[in-house]
Length: 441
Ligand SMILES: Cc1cc2nc3c(=O)[nH]c(=O)nc-3n(C[C@H](O)[C@H](O)[C@H](O)COP(=O)(O)OP(=O)(O)OC[C@H]3O[C@@H](n4cnc5c(N)ncnc54)[C@H](O)[C@@H]3O)c2cc1C
Image (tube, rainbow, N blue to C red; front, side, top):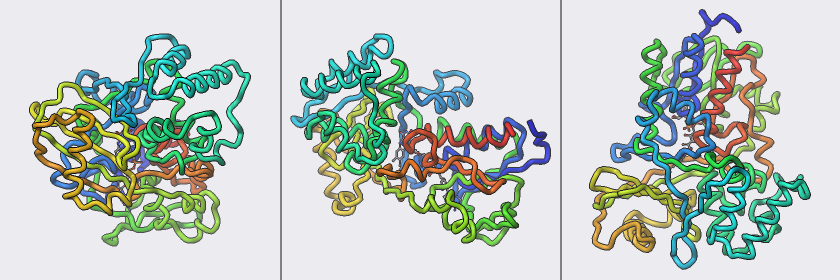
């Protein structure tokens, strides 16, 4: 391992990826400076609007890097207030159905759960279970062209009907990846399903935080970083990467000053990274050219608070509506907070807020999540531009690894090539990999 006594690192972007990199690097003795264009760090999941309030987040059992980071930040797991919740689907007739969780050893539990899941018609369930069995037995392999096909087309080819795709597989894909079945690649679909549905039983758990990402992850990391002398600077935007030969010599900030370090970590979304790159690198390196091929979509999160207590949190996936999921948690002892997410920009533009105010309570009431007499106390929506990486066919090849062709530049972010869909786990894995790449040189 290299001595790090004089080594400094500048991290551009204080979202989960940048914060994780900083946290791990300071443990190896690096001197770290993080800049973020927003006043407080935290990235996409932490609102900066006064009405944003705490946004609950979900962690899956298979998100091992996220859980390890949370454990390292909170010695006592009780402090985390993570509550296990079942996965529910709303079917065509508005009835809610739970995905079963059988306590059998892997892979038997997958098979038993699938056969017991009444969200799929019996013939489609049986077809899928037989296909899985052939896969496990090695009689059949996954097709080699999954990255070139859409998930919708592939699911049709293995016998999943239109209704099932609309009410089960599409909301599941949108919840796990933010992407629609009709636009995402079949490979991205399989890759996002496998860790939670086709592996160890505990990996299929879904937990929701009582606290927000800000209180569970961002603040504890920021406090640890401050204690060890790292610098976090808000309201500071990177404008350009300066270079000498094939090394970065500094980051020009929007205020005209220059930030210099031995190492640079770009923990920004691809749309914000590309404009910072020198023209020469964009023409010379395929690594950077490929960033321009990546596409992202906006995500809108709607928060509604109702005057009714929430005894147990609920997560319902919705087909056939613009919102793919609704998460109900206790906002206060007397109020339930509902978070609904959509990536359908046409829907959000077409509906003025007043329309949403009647539409959402009706939707919540139709599922029995909102009681008839319960009043809506507040509602607020927030659109996060380019929040979700589009996983369309061919995208896999364009997601970059952490090491760039520039010796002192590494790239982190949920959108990089981590093997995960663009979620918190992916951001944290990318941060860990950046830190390992420096610390284990
Ligand atoms: C509505 C919504 C709900 C979600 N819920 C969940 C969930 O429950 N569970 C889960 O696992 N994942 C969830 N995700 C996904 C998760 O939030 C993201 O994957 C994660 O935030 C990505 O982290 P990141 O650090 O890669 O990027 P970001 O969070 O986008 O952070 C990038 C940071 O860079 C900063 N920045 C950008 N440009 C510049 C610049 N030029 N100079 C300085 N700073 C700059 C930004 O201000 C930002 O803070 C959700 C996402 C959305 C949109």
